[in-house]
Length: 364
Image 1 (cartoon, one colour):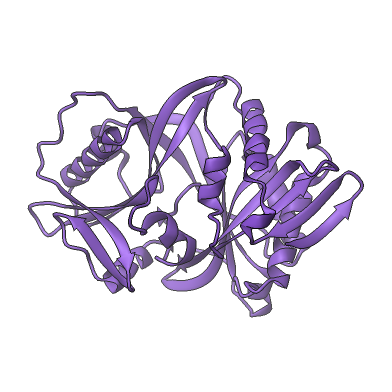
Image 2: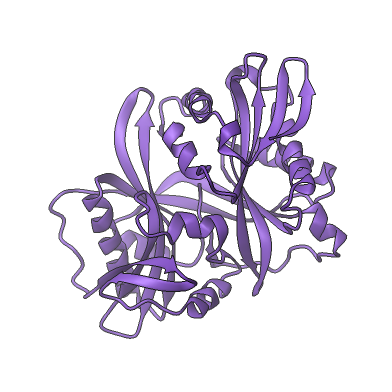
């Protein structure tokens, strides 16, 4: 544990060890904050299990910046996940910021800014100080534009470039109904995992080489390489709530899909489980094949007790394909941001420009 900042009533510290993380307390913090922010609306349940999934004990691929009050109760947090970012055809050591939360009773007291500032200070002082690019995403209208401005201001203050919003895309969703017919397009499926530096397929579609997988990610303007926390979430055998599927057809085309599954609620009502398509990475797929992959993915979600599915439009899949797969556009949008860290600016990092879809980024 690293003490970052302490003032009367609120102490901020950075932790990379589960012994210093109160998972139940973070669950109480998020439950109170998101019940307040999403009153009358569906929300993902960020409970203790969810935080333990994000901040897995015995792993060193995360850092949590936590604010606690005089009773040591968490009143704010900001999570950083270690990643390798594929940007403009190159790979950079990166950090993914998520879970930026402040208890309603402690808002308008500069806690959010202190968390954002402390995150960068902790990374400069820690053994992961070589991180060059940061990435974050905000739910427009909820975490919203004010949070984006606060976060960008904090990054500029500590020597980063400030945030660069590279994409704003809609969420699409659909209900999953029993007895739905599958696609008429032939579609096979395997689950991918990473073992001894190679991809392994469990199913009917052979795994690509790891180099071929990385090349497919590098074709996007922004994506993640199969390392660190990304590999833990999406390429680990036996992970029950997230993973990667590979779809094959009667043609040479294939489609990679990453996913996660989360509990959702409406105020005090449990709504069940949602299957979240993090992204689709197709290779030579026709629209009919992409729609078939989406339908097979929804069948997979339904078989895993999900009642609905959603996907973030990152510009790589025609929205007509989403509609053909049974998805409808919602009123929700996500804002995706990049920034160069103080380490990168010190190395003469040129900044961000000329970014264009598709993007292959997960939203946690």
